[in-house]
Length: 553
Image 1 (cartoon, rainbow, N blue to C red):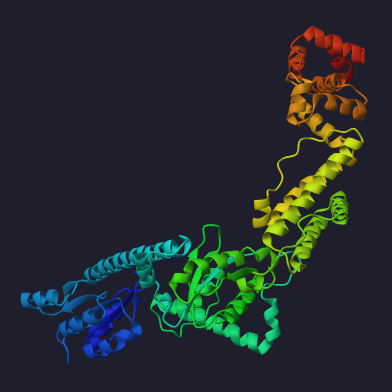
Image 2 (image 1 turned 90 degrees about the horizontal axis):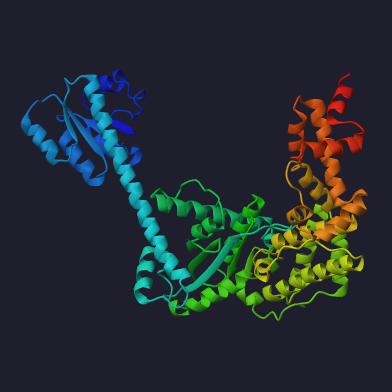
């Protein structure tokens, strides 16, 4: 909180500013003023929050200072510090809006306590202002969301209120066009160029000028919102939504992520150079994003078409992720790519799955998406169909390979849906190809993976009743097939394997613990101690007690 002391007596000014511990109490003390006139001249520049003033001074009085200062800055707090203990002065001070009336004979602690009370009032005003600003911003955003996200043509009352809350849209239909943009962060393929890279062709100097304009626009927008001078230091936008807002768009978060922005533009191309440069800067800072625009409308009657075409253009984001901007006019005439994979593409994918490495899978997915982007006729629907056909072909090939050698694959979880492939193609492809690659590896190892999982399950539960059906369900796997795998991979039947594991564990417990034989038998799954003794002697030629005594010698 900034404090300005006003008094025409130098001794009083100096004493109040140096004797009282302002800084220690958390106040920022400004250079004291020698007159009311000086204080009024400094108010716009230094913007104190609290004025501590004398009443009788050469020139204008402290009460005149209070009256004029509060007319221009009603949020000010003013404390009068007077040498006159007269009711008339105090009464006039109250009429002028002074917060407190103190005598100069007041103790330093009383003056500081009054300043503390002023600070509490100041903080309460700030809190109320912030709450009001948040509520106002939420109301404006709610109106804009209803307008932009509601679909169809907006009703006249909603349109009137939304435009009043967002005056940057007031020019639509009055010489300016309505243009809608759908913006979102994007995940670039590994090794891909940053969005907006094609703007580099404009030349380094031109790009530099555009980026400087973006920075100035951001600074101006933020300064206007904060009520600060337009010469505030330029700051670059943090994301595509902030970039669009800084360039004069009305922006609202979209329910599926990203933003929807509306702009009143003189020409359809007006925002594109600035947006392209801003998107390039975001990508260079590790925050790549994409903007898609629809057809511009002459007035609000064309809103539904402008919104629909913006969303249609945005659907092409995975087919144009490197350009930074997708225009509806550039993609509207596409007829679609081939929707079914070729035999060669299927064979290439199988080779990729058999290679199995994570980096190979990522590069393979990026190559598939790049192949779709390279097709000048590709659409989101046909790209999705082509990718889905690739995954279906890979699953069929895996099943055929397993059947050809008489093996049964574990049940596969449900694969990526067309909707997932269209919304997040890279993520959905990678997830399913990782799973298919693991299945190929298991197939090539002849089932070792299943046996290892079953063995770990058994060893963790030796004290329980371990039926073949129970273990098979845990994998999951057909019990008969699991039994065959055990015989083939371990040379033992399932029952022989479980018995062997229980006896080996019993041997460890006999040598490592002083537990009684009956307790050890129970711990490894045998409630009948006599039966355990019989099995143990058949295996080792010794009773459990003899085995322990022999190894203790």
